[in-house]
Image 1 (cartoon, rainbow, N blue to C red):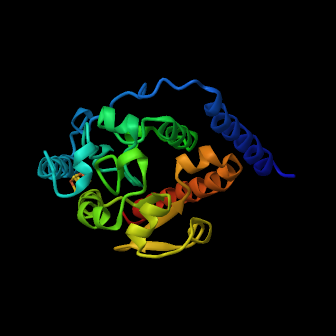
Image 2: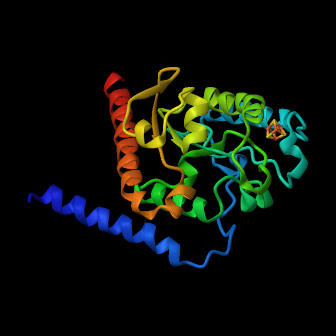
Length: 241
Ligand code: SF4
């Protein structure tokens, strides 16, 4: 076994420990630091322009009653993170904690996602995180087709504004909405997909991983693939300069 295999094995065991450890941490939901897009330090013109466009888009959703999901909403959950992110994570819709705080992925599944992002060496503030629908479906049910049809154009506009190097789709709802495919995640993951030329990594939703811990290793493989795709896109861009 060469040194790279030993290092990879150590890294995987460390990640596995982190991912498993989460299950034993009694979760005070919502301990995540609030990262509002307008709190991120920005100097750059592109960053500023994207920030303004995202703010305008968020303002369009202010008080939104376009679909029935507004009825049970406490807070609309637009999205958070870096407006000029290299990676955008797209989930399904807000849950209880997200609805309470107005921030995506802050409950137990969100903490798992954050740990996986951190395990790649990234910070949550480096990436952008949003959902297909912006209001919590009752009892966390899957969003219905008409709700997705009405709300998902706003998610697509977020992707258009940010133009990330890679999009990571978390779970079947996000994957089927973006890819327009009716396939199980087990068949989608690992395959090459694109949205408007942007490469896509489809993987399991963190909430699914909490219910099926045996699948965490596959999800980690997907995250490593995501990391490589982002790194490769960075080196392609710097080589082109
Ligand atoms: S889910 Fe989307 S379309 Fe429906 S009310 Fe909320 S913001 Fe509006």
